[in-house]
Amino acid sequence: MAFEANLSIVPVDRNQTEELHNLLPVEIGMFGGSGNYDATVIENPIEAKIFTPYGAASDNFILGTVKGRSFVFLARHDRGHSIPPHAINYRANIWGMKALGVKRIISPAAAGSLQPEKIKLGEFVIADQLFDRTFGVRKDTFFEGGPIAHLAFAEPFCPELRKVAAQTADKIGYKVHDKGTYVCINGPRFSTRAESMFYHNQGFDVIGMTAYPEAALAREAGICFVNISMPTDYDVHGEEVVTHELVLKTMAQNVDRVRKLTFEMISHIPKEASCDCQTAMKHALF
Image 1 (cartoon, rainbow, N blue to C red):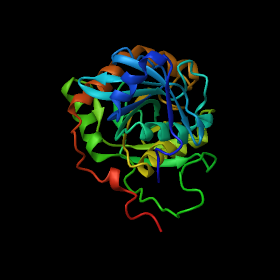
Image 2 (image 1 turned 180 degrees about the vertical axis):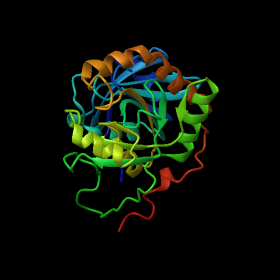
Image 3 (image 1 turned 90 degrees about the vertical axis):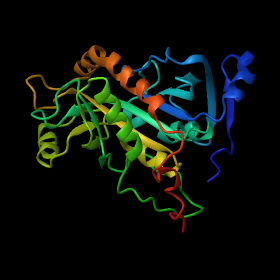
């Protein structure tokens, strides 16, 4: 697919047009999760709007450099947290990243721990598996008409980025689980007790509302994608039943740790990928 087609990038400050185009292509992208909207670590930031064939992205893209690497940040719920998970324009968000040239996406997000005996609040889970419970209501492919494509998705997250994330967390002294199954529910409501116990009994590790279809769309676009989950609640297994207020409170207490991990790992990402994420669609077209 020609992801650059119909692309228009417009800097918010028109005086930065030349600087913006000098940054392209951008190497690494990040989606900001709940409460993680601070992009101040980006050097010489340029804010830009990207027009896509799928409509508007969640927010303006913020481009610049981090640790010597070209970088772009997007707040998936917008910086005012006004877009609920089920209403995010995932295709526009991923299309915008691809059109900028992004080859790697870091995706931190709040999650619930489904295994409270093993996974505690404030720890990190670098998911290696994904279970979709969004019931098909989200647009999860770029292929609608035209070429028929079947995405191979047995391993939904980039193994190379997962390794970098886990090693970086361990290096800076954070408790990290280097694998786990992320179950993605549609939202915006949280689970019933019956639903949560079902996921718990299946052995799933964390529950969230955004990893799907982000991961699938990124793979279709040939972008490496890693989910970094930080449990902010115990879903229905704790003394306090999960609420949005509880999630934001716990996230606020740990947001600096999320930022430190995600931005620290940038310098450790290899320039050239050793995985097959970026060529996943090579044999997928029929």
